[in-house]
Structure formats: structure tokens, C-alpha cells
Length: 144
Image (cartoon, rainbow, N blue to C red; front, top):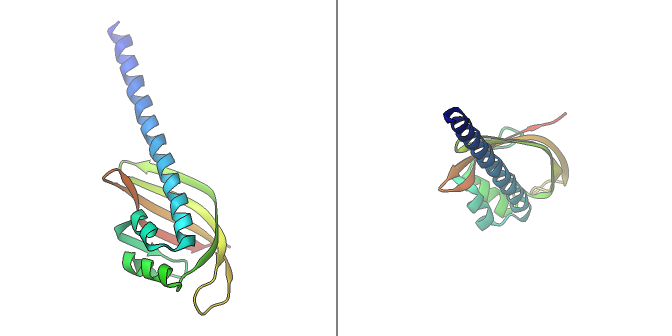
């Protein structure tokens, strides 16, 4: 009887752990979609809510931005996404940190430049802070 009870308790804990991770993965996927929309809309309030004060945002050309520079580039139109489609997304959660990888295809029309197609691989790092998942880091690279 004790062995059965112990086995049941272990299975219950494993199930709760998997369920919590699955819930976090769903929440992160939701945050990624909110970020996609916020990048297109370029609304400072939405972008601010989704990002950590310690944000490190890396572009495919090697440019690195902190949160202030990231927000300024988008809200000023210096950096302008006109279309973003995400595919092949994976989410991996480890405690209060999550990694998201996906492919991003879209279009940009940055200030002073012609519209251009983009095809990127992207790594996003999210951190859970006071119950909310915030974007802590992003690095993009060009796909062949």
C-alpha cells in the first residue's frame, strides 16, 4: 500500500510539473505573438510592457540595442516592420527562463531605404518576472 501511494504521489508531481511547463510554453507563445503584433504596430506602450529593462536586442547585421534604443528605433520609424510571419517555432522552458527559436519571414521599410524582404532565424530569451514573461534578449541571423 505504501509503495502504491508513493508511486501515485510521484506520478502526480510529474504530471503537475509537465502541466506547469506546458502552461508556461503556451504563455510564452502568446507573448511571442503579442511581440509580433507590437513590432508591426510600433506602439511604445505595448513594446514596453513586453520587454525587460535589461533588454539586449541583436539585429542580423550585428547592431545591438538596449531597450531605449530598441523603442526609439521602432517608434521613430527608423526601423519599420511591414510584415512578419513566424514559422518552425520551438519553446524550451527552464525555471524562470525560456528560449524561443523560430524563422521570421517578412518585409521591412526602414527610414531612408527601399522596402526589403527579410528571412531570419531568431533566438528570443524570455524571463519570468513577477508572473509575467518579459523579453530579455533577442538575436537574429540571416538565413540562406
